View: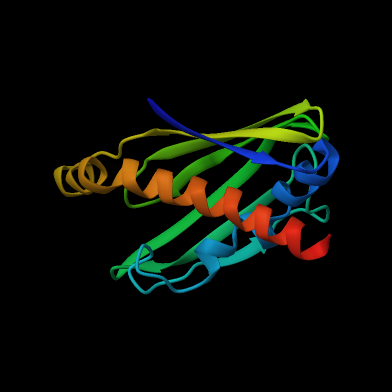
Amino acid sequence: MKTLTRIAIYSFQPGEVFNCLDNLGVTGMHMTQSSMMMMGSKLDLKFLTEHHTGLGTKYQWTGRMMGIEMDFTVEVAKWMPGQEKTWETIGTPQLIIYSWYRMHLLLTPFPGGTSAEMSISYERPQGFFYRLLSFLFADWYCLWCLKHMLDDCKKKLLKSS
């Protein structure tokens, strides 16, 4: 398993930062829009639970990337509002550069703001082709995702203040 981490500093209180980073409309936005990193593709999001935040929340991402079917379900495994959140793929995910992933968010308050540490841990897929793609692109994609999630939250908070 490999883990990559990014840290962002916000001039907002932990509760505000957590609510923003807990909102898939903000943190999942980079996967629902066509982009170069998504190879011109985008994924569809479907909630599998009535609640969209909190412990046990489940949602499914589906779509195609490079002509390859993607279908994976994510569940929130730890949820401490204003402090910490962990979510990970469950079941048998159909992914391209990972076989499984876990994301972790940890907020640390300081006078006048909040530090948000977000990480992605992943395992490489089986099969030569997918392992090669993972070797070439997984770290790059992880860092891109983390940057977009943290930056999109910052933009959203600044826009709403």
